[in-house]
Length: 345
Image 1 (cartoon, helix red, strand yellow):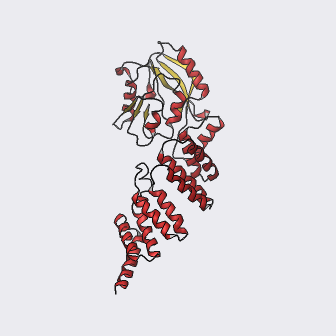
Image 2 (spheres, helix red, strand yellow; image 1 turned 90 degrees about the vertical axis):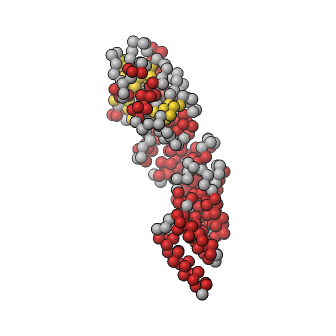
Image 3 (spheres, rainbow, N blue to C red; image 1 turned 45 degrees about the vertical axis):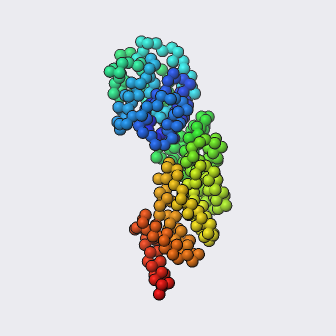
């Protein structure tokens, strides 16, 4: 299997086949999310492919196989329970004269999407491998009622939610990452009660992915903000602090809850914390304003409100360094220049 930043789906895929196959070979095209950590739960045969051509990566993965037959899967594909039984039976009965096994492929539970593909074939010498997984053609083939089911995670929130709902309807257990991404999609679809429910299920698993735990707390805080339950919003922002090092976005959001209450000293504390904390590299690019200009701009406002004009101007200039065209920062420069000139005259 070839993977690249597939943390949303890889866990459910490998869970569905790990007890059925004799080896799992993963070729990674330089993932920077949690894909590889999730894969390590199932195999230690993980190989890095530095190229950009997925076909070449696929051929590389096939060249690493050592067993008699090769099953090719994409990261979002699974074997459902009936198909697991079918595969197990097939594995016991298949003979060495078979080179290709034709299987059915369908997207979710949409039978209209069903088509026949070749994904299970006999391992040949490296020179015999064809260049494309969709065209594994050999002299003797075999048909079965095995179905490979694709449960993709796409850019379409409605479609993603439909897939997760179908999984639940068909009694599929959601993986750790399924819980996170389902909750995330529910939040995007403004189903805030359900989003909170599934983020809580995710957090109760107590898994080690610091940035995902922080994000889950942020999303829950967002949901309570939508319900105008500000105390619960603050509670969940504070809860994010228990997961590893303090994250700048958490600090900025906490600061703003105090800013809204005109508690400027507490707001100053948290905005300064945002400036100091830039530890989690997996989150640092998610909202870069919180690590650059935003806390300085807000500190300029807070210090101005408590009469610390020179500190206010200093932080506005720091904000200007990061974002020299921001209209509020430019307006503040003129404002502080006039105030400081008047103070000096």
